[in-house]
Image (cartoon, rainbow, N blue to C red):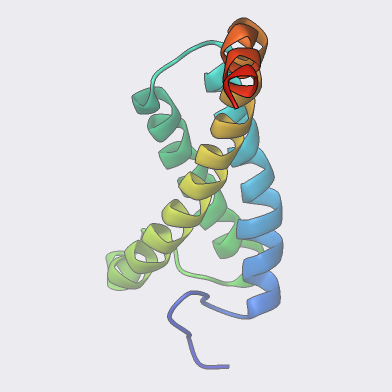
Length: 118
């Protein structure tokens, strides 16, 4: 199968490895950085490391490209950027959900005051 813009081998492989496995781990990264009140830089650093791990899974299990040898570096970088964007979206979603719950629990008077004003 020819390489697509978003996935390297097949859509099923991309969904399984990047979206389900990597996305679940990225969600937990977002959740943990929200629970510890860490900044976005910490979340981004962890997602970069997760992206390398996801690329390695693509390489080792599904014969995708990795950063070495240098002949496949450009292709691996392209798909790593795609993986990074997907994983960062999952991390941001997890962080947003948890941070929303934290803010609602911590500052519940804001929600009740807003509802009383209507």
